[in-house]
Image (cartoon, rainbow, N blue to C red):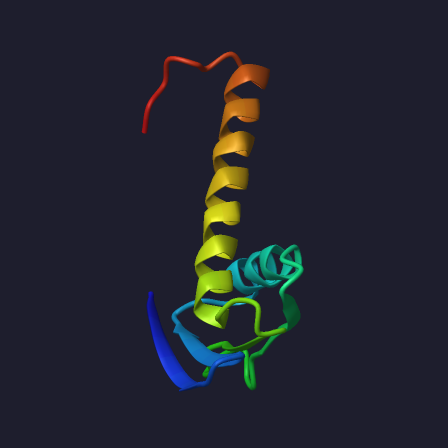
Length: 98
């Protein structure tokens, strides 16, 4: 995975996520929209077979979009860890490690 910045200013960040698709981008969009400072978060994939997602994040100016992006990634990580714990408890596999 590679993130390439296409444009940025104090309130807006446009970046490409190479090698990813809807799975990561939907989770990221949802996590970004949990942030009250984020006024817009969306992505587009021009062609599903030959295009990488291009994401746009816009904030109200109370924080930089890069900060909102890092915080959204942290929320995704926390959710994933919570889900892992729930699965381990549900299937009684506490001792297993990857």
